[in-house]
Image (tube, helix red, strand yellow):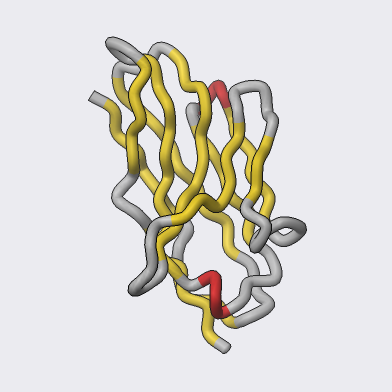
Length: 118
């Protein structure tokens, strides 16, 4: 069984910064892609950023230049540094990993709320 522990959400003023972390634990042999998705009230869940095992990243256009995704393979942890936050970044942020356990599967965290006030 795989557990994802997310942390770092909270309330911040526009222009501020937050850093999200997601640590995976359990019977994991390896992790391919890791990333963050978000879901704002009344909207569908959308991709924020993903990172491969070797560090190749992909960002949503709306966060390019403001968010930075990184990972520590030894700790099975992915980080999302969010700078220059805007009110439209307000959402529940979900961590997702593609992990090899009995086979490759996607695992989701429970989400952490990020609220950006204007």
